[in-house]
Length: 317
Image (cartoon, rainbow, N blue to C red; front, side, top):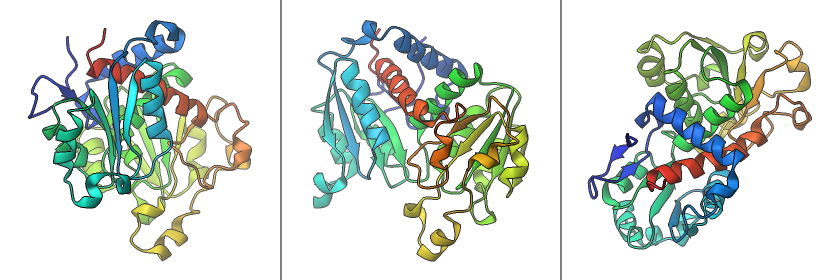
Protein backbone atom coordinates (compact mmCIF):
# COMPACT_ATOMS: atom_id res chain seq x y z
CA UNK A 1 0.00 0.00 0.00
CA UNK A 2 1.44 3.43 -0.89
CA UNK A 3 2.39 5.84 1.87
CA UNK A 4 0.03 8.64 2.75
CA UNK A 5 1.47 12.14 2.89
CA UNK A 6 -0.08 15.56 2.48
CA UNK A 7 -1.46 15.74 -1.03
CA UNK A 8 -0.06 18.38 -3.36
CA UNK A 9 -2.41 20.54 -5.37
CA UNK A 10 -0.21 20.87 -8.46
CA UNK A 11 0.42 17.15 -8.82
CA UNK A 12 -2.16 15.20 -6.78
CA UNK A 13 -0.23 11.96 -7.32
CA UNK A 14 2.92 13.16 -5.57
CA UNK A 15 3.53 12.76 -1.86
CA UNK A 16 4.96 15.36 0.53
CA UNK A 17 6.01 15.18 4.18
CA UNK A 18 5.02 18.33 6.06
CA UNK A 19 4.08 16.97 9.48
CA UNK A 20 5.19 13.65 10.99
CA UNK A 21 1.56 12.90 11.87
CA UNK A 22 0.91 12.60 8.13
CA UNK A 23 2.43 9.15 8.66
CA UNK A 24 0.62 6.29 10.34
CA UNK A 25 2.40 4.21 12.96
CA UNK A 26 2.69 1.40 10.41
CA UNK A 27 4.30 3.74 7.90
CA UNK A 28 6.79 5.03 10.45
CA UNK A 29 7.68 1.47 11.40
CA UNK A 30 8.24 0.62 7.74
CA UNK A 31 10.51 3.64 7.25
CA UNK A 32 12.51 2.59 10.31
CA UNK A 33 12.79 -0.94 8.91
CA UNK A 34 14.13 0.40 5.60
CA UNK A 35 16.62 2.62 7.43
CA UNK A 36 17.86 -0.34 9.46
CA UNK A 37 18.26 -2.36 6.27
CA UNK A 38 20.32 0.49 4.80
CA UNK A 39 22.53 0.39 7.90
CA UNK A 40 23.05 -3.36 7.50
CA UNK A 41 23.36 -3.44 3.69
CA UNK A 42 24.56 0.00 2.44
CA UNK A 43 25.97 -1.50 -0.76
CA UNK A 44 22.46 -2.39 -1.91
CA UNK A 45 21.42 1.27 -2.00
CA UNK A 46 24.37 3.06 -3.62
CA UNK A 47 22.74 3.46 -7.04
CA UNK A 48 19.07 3.66 -6.06
CA UNK A 49 18.77 7.38 -6.88
CA UNK A 50 21.20 7.59 -9.76
CA UNK A 51 20.27 10.54 -12.02
CA UNK A 52 17.87 11.90 -9.36
CA UNK A 53 18.38 15.41 -7.95
CA UNK A 54 17.55 16.76 -4.48
CA UNK A 55 17.08 20.54 -4.10
CA UNK A 56 17.92 21.81 -0.61
CA UNK A 57 16.16 25.15 -0.10
CA UNK A 58 17.39 26.40 3.28
CA UNK A 59 16.19 29.89 4.15
CA UNK A 60 17.86 29.81 7.58
CA UNK A 61 21.16 28.37 8.87
CA UNK A 62 21.50 24.63 9.36
CA UNK A 63 24.41 22.24 9.66
CA UNK A 64 23.13 18.80 10.58
CA UNK A 65 19.82 18.80 8.70
CA UNK A 66 21.17 20.22 5.44
CA UNK A 67 24.32 18.09 5.38
CA UNK A 68 22.32 15.03 6.43
CA UNK A 69 19.96 15.46 3.48
CA UNK A 70 22.84 16.05 1.10
CA UNK A 71 24.82 13.09 2.41
CA UNK A 72 21.71 10.90 2.18
CA UNK A 73 21.17 11.77 -1.48
CA UNK A 74 24.83 11.32 -2.39
CA UNK A 75 24.93 7.90 -0.72
CA UNK A 76 21.91 6.90 -2.78
CA UNK A 77 23.85 7.82 -5.91
CA UNK A 78 21.93 11.05 -6.56
CA UNK A 79 22.91 14.69 -6.91
CA UNK A 80 22.22 17.83 -4.90
CA UNK A 81 21.57 21.47 -5.80
CA UNK A 82 20.12 24.40 -3.91
CA UNK A 83 21.09 27.12 -1.45
CA UNK A 84 22.01 27.25 2.24
CA UNK A 85 21.01 30.84 2.97
CA UNK A 86 18.11 33.01 1.87
CA UNK A 87 20.53 35.77 0.87
CA UNK A 88 21.86 33.55 -1.91
CA UNK A 89 18.39 32.98 -3.36
CA UNK A 90 15.90 35.09 -5.29
CA UNK A 91 14.05 35.66 -2.02
CA UNK A 92 16.25 38.74 -1.68
CA UNK A 93 14.55 40.05 -4.83
CA UNK A 94 11.12 39.41 -3.40
CA UNK A 95 10.36 36.06 -5.01
CA UNK A 96 7.63 34.16 -3.18
CA UNK A 97 8.01 30.65 -1.78
CA UNK A 98 5.31 29.53 -4.23
CA UNK A 99 7.23 30.80 -7.25
CA UNK A 100 10.49 29.35 -5.97
CA UNK A 101 8.82 25.95 -5.59
CA UNK A 102 7.43 26.09 -9.11
CA UNK A 103 10.82 27.09 -10.50
CA UNK A 104 12.83 24.47 -8.65
CA UNK A 105 10.35 21.81 -9.79
CA UNK A 106 11.79 22.35 -13.27
CA UNK A 107 15.29 21.38 -12.14
CA UNK A 108 15.01 18.75 -9.40
CA UNK A 109 13.11 15.59 -8.49
CA UNK A 110 12.53 16.32 -4.79
CA UNK A 111 12.80 19.32 -2.43
CA UNK A 112 13.92 19.62 1.19
CA UNK A 113 12.95 23.06 2.56
CA UNK A 114 13.80 24.83 5.82
CA UNK A 115 12.18 28.17 6.46
CA UNK A 116 11.84 30.44 9.51
CA UNK A 117 8.17 31.09 8.73
CA UNK A 118 5.66 28.51 9.88
CA UNK A 119 3.73 27.00 7.00
CA UNK A 120 6.21 27.92 4.26
CA UNK A 121 6.99 24.29 3.30
CA UNK A 122 3.25 23.60 3.11
CA UNK A 123 2.89 26.51 0.67
CA UNK A 124 5.80 25.09 -1.33
CA UNK A 125 4.17 21.66 -1.43
CA UNK A 126 0.96 23.17 -2.80
CA UNK A 127 2.85 24.76 -5.67
CA UNK A 128 5.63 22.29 -6.46
CA UNK A 129 5.08 19.48 -8.93
CA UNK A 130 7.68 17.34 -7.11
CA UNK A 131 7.69 15.98 -3.53
CA UNK A 132 8.48 18.48 -0.76
CA UNK A 133 9.98 17.55 2.60
CA UNK A 134 9.62 19.98 5.49
CA UNK A 135 13.12 20.33 6.97
CA UNK A 136 11.86 22.66 9.71
CA UNK A 137 9.49 25.63 9.66
CA UNK A 138 9.92 28.09 12.51
CA UNK A 139 8.60 26.71 15.79
CA UNK A 140 6.11 24.50 13.96
CA UNK A 141 7.28 21.11 12.61
CA UNK A 142 10.51 19.24 11.97
CA UNK A 143 9.32 15.81 10.84
CA UNK A 144 12.63 14.35 9.67
CA UNK A 145 14.22 15.19 13.03
CA UNK A 146 11.37 13.31 14.65
CA UNK A 147 11.92 10.32 12.37
CA UNK A 148 15.60 10.52 13.36
CA UNK A 149 14.61 10.53 17.02
CA UNK A 150 12.30 7.54 16.57
CA UNK A 151 14.97 5.52 14.76
CA UNK A 152 17.44 6.36 17.52
CA UNK A 153 15.04 5.35 20.29
CA UNK A 154 14.25 2.11 18.46
CA UNK A 155 17.93 1.25 18.04
CA UNK A 156 18.87 2.23 21.59
CA UNK A 157 15.89 0.77 23.47
CA UNK A 158 14.64 -1.89 21.05
CA UNK A 159 11.08 -0.53 21.15
CA UNK A 160 8.90 2.54 20.75
CA UNK A 161 6.31 1.65 23.39
CA UNK A 162 6.33 1.29 27.18
CA UNK A 163 8.68 4.23 27.71
CA UNK A 164 8.98 7.20 30.07
CA UNK A 165 10.30 10.13 28.05
CA UNK A 166 11.66 13.25 29.70
CA UNK A 167 11.74 16.40 27.55
CA UNK A 168 13.93 19.08 29.09
CA UNK A 169 14.66 22.71 28.28
CA UNK A 170 12.81 24.90 25.80
CA UNK A 171 9.45 23.18 25.45
CA UNK A 172 7.65 26.33 24.30
CA UNK A 173 9.56 27.05 21.09
CA UNK A 174 11.17 23.64 20.60
CA UNK A 175 9.61 22.27 17.42
CA UNK A 176 11.50 18.99 17.82
CA UNK A 177 9.78 18.38 21.15
CA UNK A 178 6.34 19.18 19.72
CA UNK A 179 6.86 16.77 16.83
CA UNK A 180 8.28 14.04 19.08
CA UNK A 181 5.26 14.25 21.39
CA UNK A 182 2.94 14.03 18.38
CA UNK A 183 4.67 10.92 17.06
CA UNK A 184 5.26 9.07 20.32
CA UNK A 185 1.76 9.73 21.64
CA UNK A 186 0.48 7.12 19.20
CA UNK A 187 2.53 4.30 20.71
CA UNK A 188 1.26 2.23 23.63
CA UNK A 189 2.00 3.07 27.26
CA UNK A 190 4.20 6.11 26.66
CA UNK A 191 4.46 8.70 29.44
CA UNK A 192 6.02 12.16 29.20
CA UNK A 193 7.80 14.13 31.90
CA UNK A 194 7.96 17.76 30.76
CA UNK A 195 10.85 19.61 32.42
CA UNK A 196 11.14 23.36 31.87
CA UNK A 197 11.09 26.76 33.53
CA UNK A 198 7.60 28.22 33.80
CA UNK A 199 8.28 30.67 30.95
CA UNK A 200 9.15 27.83 28.54
CA UNK A 201 6.38 25.34 29.35
CA UNK A 202 4.81 23.26 26.60
CA UNK A 203 2.26 25.32 24.59
CA UNK A 204 -1.39 24.91 25.49
CA UNK A 205 -2.13 23.62 21.99
CA UNK A 206 0.31 20.72 22.42
CA UNK A 207 -0.98 20.00 25.91
CA UNK A 208 -4.64 19.86 24.85
CA UNK A 209 -4.48 18.63 21.24
CA UNK A 210 -1.76 15.99 21.56
CA UNK A 211 -1.54 14.94 25.19
CA UNK A 212 -4.94 15.41 26.83
CA UNK A 213 -7.00 14.62 23.74
CA UNK A 214 -5.15 11.31 23.26
CA UNK A 215 -5.25 10.41 26.95
CA UNK A 216 -1.44 10.44 27.23
CA UNK A 217 -0.09 10.47 30.78
CA UNK A 218 2.20 13.43 31.47
CA UNK A 219 3.54 15.52 34.31
CA UNK A 220 5.15 18.95 34.29
CA UNK A 221 8.02 19.89 36.58
CA UNK A 222 10.84 22.40 36.90
CA UNK A 223 13.25 19.86 38.47
CA UNK A 224 15.44 17.68 36.28
CA UNK A 225 16.96 16.01 39.35
CA UNK A 226 13.59 14.87 40.67
CA UNK A 227 12.53 13.51 37.28
CA UNK A 228 15.77 11.68 36.46
CA UNK A 229 15.29 8.29 38.21
CA UNK A 230 12.13 7.37 36.29
CA UNK A 231 13.31 8.25 32.78
CA UNK A 232 14.02 5.79 29.96
CA UNK A 233 14.73 8.63 27.51
CA UNK A 234 16.06 12.11 28.32
CA UNK A 235 15.53 14.48 25.40
CA UNK A 236 17.56 17.63 26.04
CA UNK A 237 17.01 20.84 24.08
CA UNK A 238 18.78 24.17 23.94
CA UNK A 239 17.14 27.49 24.71
CA UNK A 240 17.02 29.03 21.24
CA UNK A 241 18.22 32.61 20.99
CA UNK A 242 16.62 33.00 17.56
CA UNK A 243 13.12 32.36 18.96
CA UNK A 244 13.29 35.18 21.52
CA UNK A 245 12.17 38.75 20.91
CA UNK A 246 13.79 39.96 24.12
CA UNK A 247 17.53 39.39 24.65
CA UNK A 248 17.20 39.82 28.42
CA UNK A 249 14.72 36.94 28.58
CA UNK A 250 17.08 34.73 26.61
CA UNK A 251 20.05 35.51 28.86
CA UNK A 252 17.97 34.85 31.97
CA UNK A 253 16.74 31.45 30.76
CA UNK A 254 19.54 30.06 28.59
CA UNK A 255 21.30 28.18 31.41
CA UNK A 256 18.16 26.83 33.11
CA UNK A 257 19.30 23.21 32.72
CA UNK A 258 22.85 21.95 32.30
CA UNK A 259 23.31 18.17 32.29
CA UNK A 260 26.49 17.21 34.16
CA UNK A 261 27.80 13.78 35.26
CA UNK A 262 26.63 14.27 38.85
CA UNK A 263 23.04 14.70 37.66
CA UNK A 264 23.19 11.18 36.19
CA UNK A 265 23.94 9.56 39.54
CA UNK A 266 20.30 8.61 39.99
CA UNK A 267 19.62 7.82 36.33
CA UNK A 268 18.94 4.33 34.97
CA UNK A 269 21.97 2.46 33.65
CA UNK A 270 20.31 2.17 30.24
CA UNK A 271 19.01 5.74 30.01
CA UNK A 272 19.26 7.09 26.46
CA UNK A 273 20.26 10.78 26.25
CA UNK A 274 19.14 12.46 23.04
CA UNK A 275 19.59 16.01 21.76
CA UNK A 276 18.60 17.38 18.32
CA UNK A 277 21.71 19.60 18.36
CA UNK A 278 23.34 22.07 18.09
CA UNK A 279 24.40 21.94 21.71
CA UNK A 280 25.44 25.15 23.44
CA UNK A 281 26.17 24.31 27.07
CA UNK A 282 23.07 22.38 28.17
CA UNK A 283 25.01 19.08 28.06
CA UNK A 284 28.50 19.07 29.55
CA UNK A 285 31.16 17.65 27.21
CA UNK A 286 32.02 15.32 30.11
CA UNK A 287 28.80 13.44 29.24
CA UNK A 288 30.05 12.64 25.72
CA UNK A 289 32.08 9.63 26.88
CA UNK A 290 29.12 8.16 28.81
CA UNK A 291 27.66 5.20 26.86
CA UNK A 292 24.20 6.61 27.57
CA UNK A 293 24.98 9.67 25.40
CA UNK A 294 23.27 8.97 22.07
CA UNK A 295 23.25 12.37 20.38
CA UNK A 296 26.09 11.78 17.91
CA UNK A 297 24.72 8.34 17.04
CA UNK A 298 21.44 10.22 16.61
CA UNK A 299 23.07 12.46 13.98
CA UNK A 300 24.20 9.43 11.99
CA UNK A 301 20.75 7.88 12.23
CA UNK A 302 19.39 11.05 10.63
CA UNK A 303 21.20 10.26 7.41
CA UNK A 304 19.80 6.74 7.23
CA UNK A 305 16.18 7.68 7.93
CA UNK A 306 16.37 10.48 5.33
CA UNK A 307 17.69 7.98 2.81
CA UNK A 308 14.68 5.78 3.51
CA UNK A 309 12.30 8.75 3.21
CA UNK A 310 13.79 9.94 -0.09
CA UNK A 311 13.39 6.44 -1.53
CA UNK A 312 9.74 6.29 -0.51
CA UNK A 313 8.80 9.75 -1.76
CA UNK A 314 10.49 9.08 -5.08
CA UNK A 315 8.80 5.66 -5.17
CA UNK A 316 12.12 3.90 -5.68
CA UNK A 317 11.89 0.18 -4.99
